[in-house]
Length: 77
Length: 77
Image (cartoon, rainbow over all chains, first blue to last red; front, side):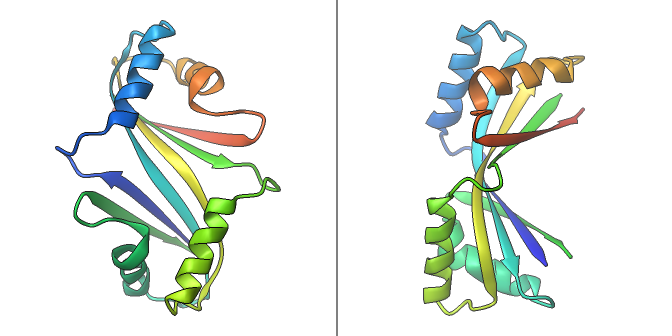
């Protein structure tokens, strides 16, 4: 089965990379764009029947920095 | 409205960052993990009524490298 983890900076944490993308888009003439935020997505192939709690453990220990990042886990078989 | 763009390396393109995450997870005892791939997610605040084609243009011009990356656009109002 497959797990997809989305990791985004928490609201209120400065995101200079997102800001840079926003400015670049504006410079290219995309003026309909407002705030931009960039995050990570990690796709994991995992053994069938793996518990979501196990993926949460991976996030807490390695994949995300829970101090400044939020994560969201989607499981698909 | 909000647009979310997922950018992943195309199948067949080496993903050393994903490989490194996979090895690190294995080293931490998460042996149920197989292949890992890392990508980017970009969240854009855009003016209401913006066409999806416009977001595609942003992807082609700036957000993704269409030679080695695939992108997927989700629009939400």
